[in-house]
Image (tube, rainbow, N blue to C red; front, side, top):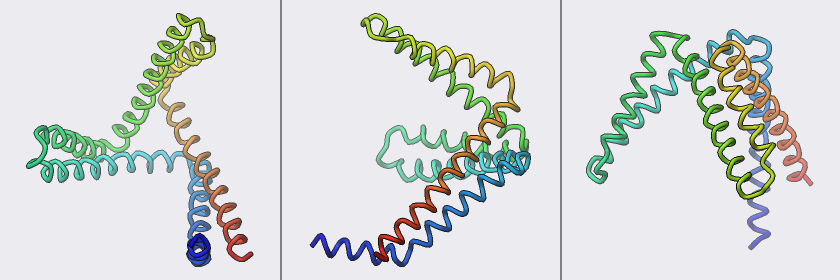
Amino acid sequence: MTTTVLDDLKRVYQRTWWALVLRGLLALAVGVFIFARPLDSVAAFALVIAWWALFAGAVDIVHAVEMRPVMTHWWVLLLSGLVGVGFGIAALVYYPVLSLTFAVVWVAWWLMVTGILGISAALMQRRLGVQWGWIAAFGVLSVVASAFALFSPPVTLAAIMGLIAAFAIVAGVALLVGAFKLRSLVHA
């Protein structure tokens, strides 16, 4: 039975390994585009945030209506959906400022919460007599980065776009390597 499953997998990958190549090439293209055209990339990022909010909000509204008969607090999901749709519309009307502001504030809050949790964990570890210095340093650095993110939105946006581009390039290379390794295994 194991041989049959392996043979089936080989046949599937033999026919579809090229899809991984295409995904890898697309990821590489996105990463290179972001580095080559950062302002266009930021504008596209703002649109993605706006359309994502609209789509997610609409899905939440439909889900809330469907869940109404079985969920007592279905209105919370409906409210969430309405907020998402409202934000998406506002982000398109006030394009790109609202979406980009959201991205900066989201990153700043994430850094702040991460920092506070890190400091809290360090204090707990200190009470237990466990090494706590590095975690405390990370927490403080994260809180400072949060303040910096709020006070320097262009740098924050550049960092976000740089991380997205780097991830896309690394993912693209990994997908290409994986596709060709898979192809060589299937043809072996």
